[in-house]
Image (cartoon, rainbow, N blue to C red; front, side, top):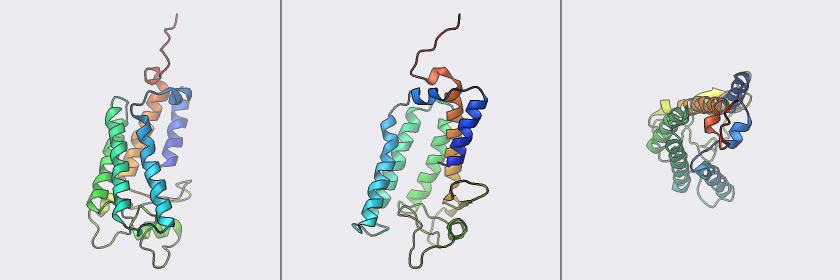
Length: 192
């Protein structure tokens, strides 16, 4: 997700008289599955640095696919929260791009160079999860093609259309949760 959109959601929620504590008390089904992609990515990154597998091994593609599947399950289970259906749509777009490209999300070389300065010589990937878009890339318009850098972004990165849609859904969900006590674990108190 795009950090700036999450930060924006917190500010908008606060301006609209939402409460930050409702985010801590939100009732999310299968919340533990949110950490599956992080765990898989960390394991894949460690395996890459230890040279256990080749950088574009099927293991990394499988880890990416399972991570997206777990996030989509969480989205489906929590679809009653406003914005979560939008999150699911963004995740689905990313999943389509990843599955079409063998388990990897290719990134546009121009976008990577624009954000990071260059691609290391002899390296065909921006990270353990990404390949560079080439003639064999399928659905390249769904891949990481949006360069985000200063002054438009605090955190430099390359995003996909799916990332933008997922983050927009998260923005809607965060604001809704902050403003509506019905999503909180705490009982709703009636005012006298």
